[in-house]
Amino acid sequence: MKRDKGFDPRRLRSRTQVPWRWRLAIGLATSLCGIAVLLTMTGIASLLGQPASLAQLSHGVAFALLGVGVSLFWLGIWARRRCRARQHQHQHGLSLARHLLKKPD
Figure 1 (cartoon, one colour):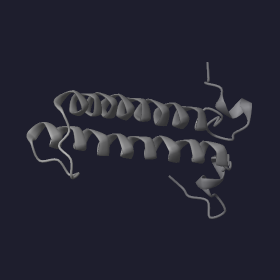
Figure 2 (figure 1 turned 30 degrees about the vertical axis):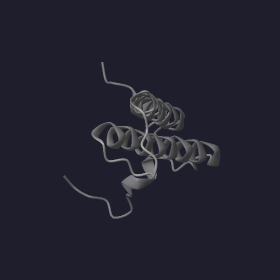
Figure 3 (figure 1 turned 45 degrees about the vertical axis):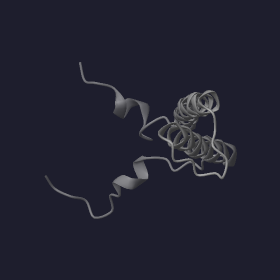
């Protein structure tokens, strides 16, 4: 196939700026996941008998920390996926003329 020296395939894809609010939302969702992992690890450590804090947590509090941590983790993952989907929703693919995108009959 012959290559044209003036052809740049990167120009076919439009480079749109991502709004800062989606980046901020993704950052908050990722931070939520990080906090959830810390809560879950604290609950597991307390259940195993090696708490990181000075006071021994009761089993009820440890199970509550574990449950809250896991649920916050899944909430953070869901929020991150939703933000990423909304972020990429407005991209329309290649920037070609309509007659070039039609399939030949």
